[in-house]
Length: 544
Image 1: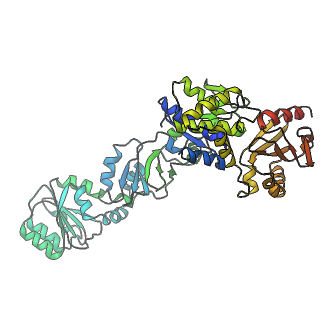
Image 2: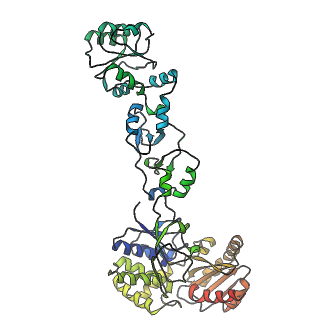
Image 3: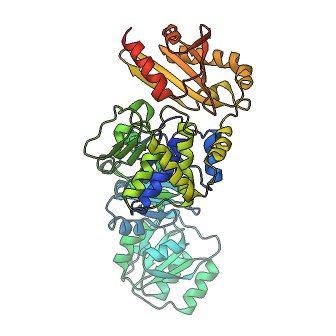
């Protein structure tokens, strides 16, 4: 498994979350570490604008921290083609550790599995079953198995799978019916012709004996195949019964896994099976590895760096199943815990990207124009062009530093253009608007959620307000929240319109300046969920 570090922001990502993930992943790569920027949900319009403006791809969508099979070190698969002989399979098996051969077709896709049990079981088959298997063998596989060569092969050759062995004295010739059989013998033109006369379908001439032209001509006339080998008769007789293909004896009821399955899930599925090794397939059903119970107990967990959050309810699913390497955040210190010391940077400022810019400087790097543009954009987004109460002098100084690198001459003009891209209310469903940027909080026994989006013209909000109220009430009911609040904040920081539902909605009268009705209102000063609204709510809820 590679030591890649996945860098991700919170659920329902905003611009700071996405820009922080991309720029911190870039910083890690500059320091020689392998890092990939991730996201946990769809991008909002503002973030799309920023990424397009600075020529960046969307981060990888990743919603679960657990390791997949493709993340861990698997055994190299031992692959054999379906037409290979059982004799060859034994030789391959002895050279592999997992004692399982994965049988593939002509397109490289899995057909079955051949284990030592499959190969051994054949050796105790009754004669009739063994004959049937040998009858499926091709003449080419027979010649290859006995270390020989085909001297003559009739068209549409076949045999009944029975084998006769004729020794030097030839007494066996009279003991069996040789019709449609494979006959193994060495010298003697007359014996060879006699076997052809009795209807043998294949003569196997051993000990490197020459085949006379008269015998060969007679074999062609009677359509009897001829195979020659340097090996002696007994050795030939011992191995010829393994000339049929592995396709005839492989197990087709195969348990296989895809490389995008989570290791934990695979371990559970393995509990009800005794198979030692299982094939792992890619999206094209090609065999890419072999997994055993050992792998599901001994593997490196995925590594994650978390940006713009530190709370379990905002982070990636199954965060306890990964290794956290860093947390960089400007919010309250959350409840994520780690097994060992990590890089933890938490500062009181308006944006995570302000902290990250400082880290670039600490490591001795100056962000390139694209990274500087992302860092600047996130600061302007989170501080609403420095109008938010969360803004600190450090945010302003950092933005000026980044603007020079990014080639942004007029910060306010760029901020207006960028923030204006985030107000696409008419083209979004109420559910999409509510979930653009929503965070869930727990205070004592109460659970509440606060969502936030921007608007440019109040008329746009008023048009969708009835549908927003209906959707918010439905979401509050379904999630059984004590309070659900949605803020529509003016892009230039001129206050926020509030919509709210839940048993605790009555406390909103003490939070906002003006109430329109029991479920909506306006405050000309509140534009920050974190710095202005949360402190008021927390104090009121704790006093209940």
